[in-house]
Length: 438
Image (cartoon, rainbow, N blue to C red; front, side, top):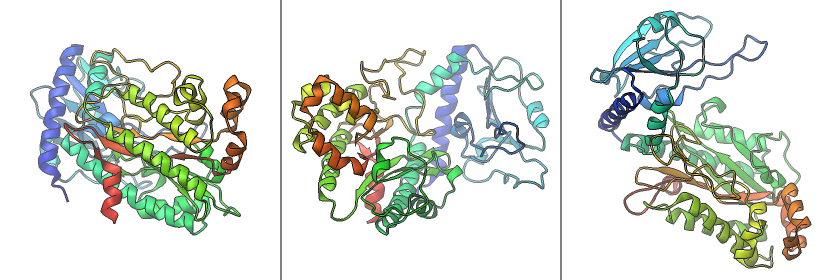
């Protein structure tokens, strides 16, 4: 197990340096970061599951600290105002402990009002969800401060990478359990339950809602219906599911073909080769948007080699045919959030890099640099709505629609890894985690 204490100390030093620069940029004296509160359901007294605010867990590995705050003033030791209410209705958060607590002045309070009383209020940058002013503290989320902090959040510290490796190991273990459930003929819900049990996490603790699609459901990009009954025949499974480690995410997608469905398995293998070629290109200086466009050309060759289209890769891309089969982006930045902030940032002053024309759903346009972690997730889907548009277009004559019809019952393919850009070869967090399982 990695010793997190020295890694965390260096991580915190980096955060303090960034905060100093961000506050100076915005002209503020203090930084206040809220842990957030669980939202209340409309016309109800029940709450949504609590999710800690990402900027808060950037500073401390606390994911169950509603109502707490980080207060930082340059030159002073950071302060954690930890809300531990007197409450017999709910489980009260445990007092902070572990490798990181020595780096904070920790003040434990019992009410939100007491927490606010502990915060510096003059000329503070307050990073928090919108809320009514509380005794002089109002969320202002100053753009100059956030632009700076969000830009540099893309560069993960060794401490963050250690936690992301842990999240990947948990996710890989759970994916193996999900595949076993699929091959045993379980329903989508049954597969999801096997995943949760192997991860040891609840739905609310996962970094995002799992996508578990059997057969044609794999064509729904964000399918979350979780069918309760076992299908008469399980032909394929597309599962997009991650895990968490102290607030950091993994994001893993795998597609499986049932035994004997050789044509679809061959297509999965071809897409896996495309995906691995993309992973190998995660290097310093690579334009991520260009990598996305390159993936379309690689997909076009797969479509032709497997008899789905009769056109050159250039024609398939230029005519929009590949976009019908692969309508989403190649991937995104990942870390404290599955779709982490700063994916379009050109610099730390808020300028952005636009998406390439014709690719409106790409979530990352930055040039890759060491320390960045991105997902690589090319896809190939059989989506009726998009395919019908191609059928009506001139390029439709160059699509083998009979072949498309034979593959539509499988839904689609997505293969996704989390990849670290380094000074040399990329580190594939996902493949390393699966390899460690044997």
